Length: 174
Image (tube, rainbow, N blue to C red; front, side):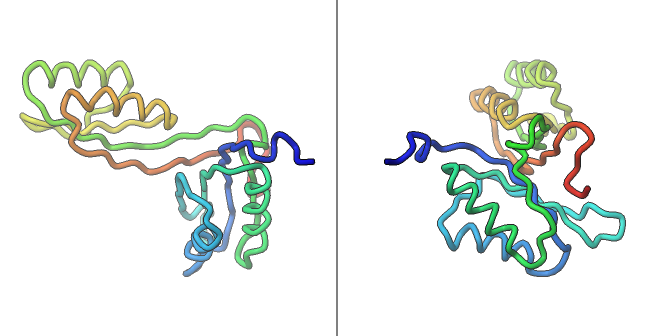
């Protein structure tokens, strides 16, 4: 008899420490696409002083069995040093960066500035008819701000995707 939790979907933030070499990201993406797994967010950047290691942060959703399969398959890739499911490691921080362009004049402009102040978004570019706001925070916070900007004159959004790190003394490289 199947466990009732077998079909329960959960979000997972997975950090992967890999060799910083050509083709590694393609292999990671290929693992997801070849098996029909969805990537909700993906970020990658070098993380050591010599540029030999990169950290890939993948946000995905699936059943517990699917998440375990993803982690096991990532761990088997040759240039992978460590795979960590941050959602299971305990308390962790997740942030995104977004650039949000809003076009408007008059009261719409004033409302955009008022909301930006409330959300602690910074003005990084301004013209007489537009603003570009820079904002960091949780995906939910960015979604809420973007939603409020739509009726005011949202013109364009560029987001980094999630980056995450475990709180406390443990680390992916330790």
